[in-house]
Image 1 (cartoon, rainbow, N blue to C red):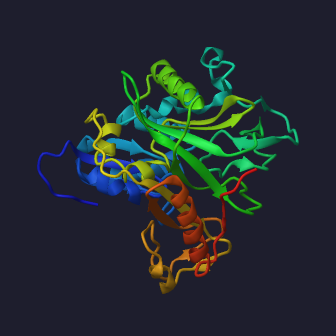
Image 2 (spheres, helix red, strand yellow):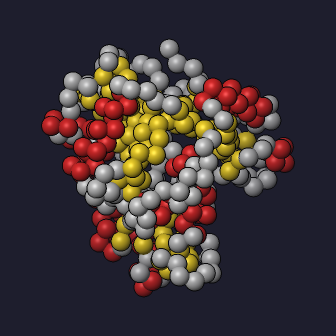
Length: 358
């Protein structure tokens, strides 16, 4: 994507994101030329190996252009590429080589935990009360029932709703963007915890104060910068931290609709946020229940993004399209989400979304 304009902050940006569309417009306000790698849509797998990535870099002359890197997803477990990027590019946000220290809960310092902020019990051995998790996965792809990978560990299952907090971290106090409830696919045997979207919510004290204080604490401890999100559950009167995501993540979709200049805050070009919407927002990712060929009926769905081309073949368990939804309050938003999913399922062979929890 090439955009001609004057006085842009950067000449070239390399965006690495599975589902890059949501970031393009925001980046375009600050960048002359955007190069993107998207493993969901690219015909060539530029992230298959370090050599593949180097070929992409050199074929696009990225080293000669002073290219900056914006990262969201696609490099899970690819430490050689992490190191190559850090050695040759300026990453806008948390350094990729720090991800393991920040996001690996097995490494979290005991001083960051308390009787109100905990992490679920973990083990290297199978336990029927535990979930299998992969150190190098995202979006729930490596969560659930995998017992064989060498990178698998086990985390005690915590029942109930999953929440997240999204914020902009900086060297001073972080700016809280909002709280969200996360959703998963329904009745997917292979990927039972596949991330299927989220919605902005009200979130009441006392837990709000505990998690906001913890955000300040870890922002300073890890020297976090840019857009960050943390997934958690409320269980036995404590907050159980499930994941720390030191990068652009799915909830960015919600807050770019609420704020005018979210990307400029992520890239540390601004430290103030301009509100453009007071609505409550949600996005729902629909996944293929079987291999499907996209036909023109998909064009009847309103307010969607990540739209495939007519005739594209979407493989089973891969994302098809994203529904974007808004309402004046949390209750109405929830009702509209259910209605939009039901309508979409009538024309697309997709999984339902797990909205209700015990």
